[in-house]
Image (cartoon, rainbow, N blue to C red; front, side, top):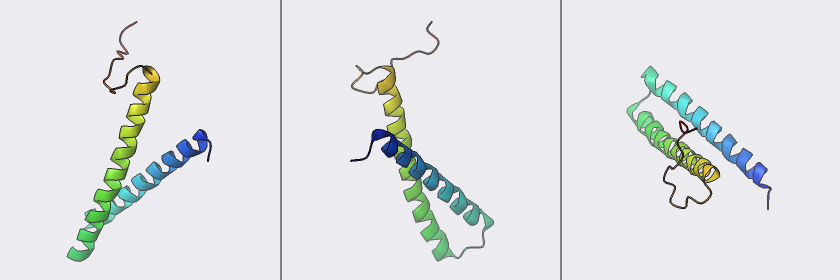
Length: 84
C-alpha cells in the first residue's frame, strides 16, 4: 500500500495530465482542420477528460470541507471565511 502523500501526488499528477491533454485537444479542435470523424472522436475523448477533471475537483472540494470541519459528514459548507 502506498503512503497517502504518494497517492495524493499521483492524483494531482493525473488531474494535471488530464487537464493538459484536454487543453491540447480543445486547441486542435479550435483550429477547425479536423475531419468530422476525428472531431467526434476528439469530442468524446474531451468529455471523458472533463469528467475525470470534474471528479478530481469534486473530491478535492470534499477533502477541503472535511479538513475545515471534520464533523461535517454531509459535506454542506459551514465555514464562513469572513467570520473572525
